[in-house]
Length: 457
Image (tube, rainbow, N blue to C red; front, side, top):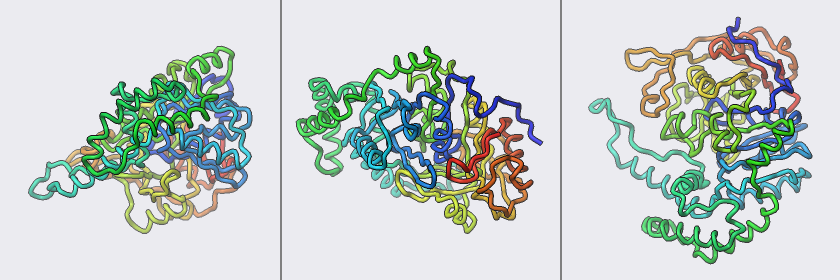
């Protein structure tokens, strides 16, 4: 029986502003939930991340992969906002918009913050160079072992998507060389910023043989061209959003990546470059967190991770491969196979706590169908100590050994279930076990990729 506190209905229209946040290492199924909720909202807003994030939405059997464009774009007439906290690759954005247009999707509702920072070609070059250097340094360092039990693991590549996200955020903080989307239509500002950036970066990049770096004139011309295409969409989105809220409109905030990849509260340094948790909505959009009425935390029925970093429940066996195949666990953005493991409730409870989650959304439950036994991590062994606290530090988390509880599996296909009561008893018990441990009610259970394969409680 769940100990979770009662909460308002999934479809409750009283919330002026709601947020959808990932509670794991990303890829939790946020896109499907945003797509479901968008129908009842007037605007959908991305507030963090960049083209490294990928949300998949299936509508009547047709799959859409979105990277920068908010998932609500699939509803005609909705306002879709890319907030100032996002780093935007303008060429990737145009490619995505053109791809959607070819499939008959109306993208006229897209608005881009003039304060969002641009990802430029040299950011991708820098990203790839750093990853290669880290990999090389890691291979040359002496690893920890029996003779050095307390030594940190060798430095290795972070496992980025090499899309330039981290370097773009770094330039944002360093200020002088950063280019914002509004600058793409200001030739003199654009030239000055790019000239400073190339002056600073070219010696380092050339020293490591990273290849030809564009000259200032060539890059300014490219940026001006793409800026002209996007100019009608670039606006002050902070006033836009506050204006919508003042009119009584409903706004949905869409988080990218996942809470355990948050730059401050994730498994540092194996994290992304932005604030992924709900607290990032304020700086990422200009709308204070006090306006949020609901925070829905999305989680898979198991765990996945892409890239480097510790993952206590990882399964490097036939069970893990079975889950990967059933769940189509390959990156939306990169196509890389995801690492797969049993559900880590220690991590999920931590993520729900730091987000102030008011409801859970459990996805991919159907993937576990046919498992005779399902394991769930409810604590860690850290040396001689047992704990149920999640250490948001890669070095500490690497020491964690999962403590499992075993639950009965279920054999039935769940794809046709539309009510919670339709689920087999063992599947319901699994959901209730999660609710009881995390202390938050599961408002939605997804039993397949399509919009219709959703149980709303």
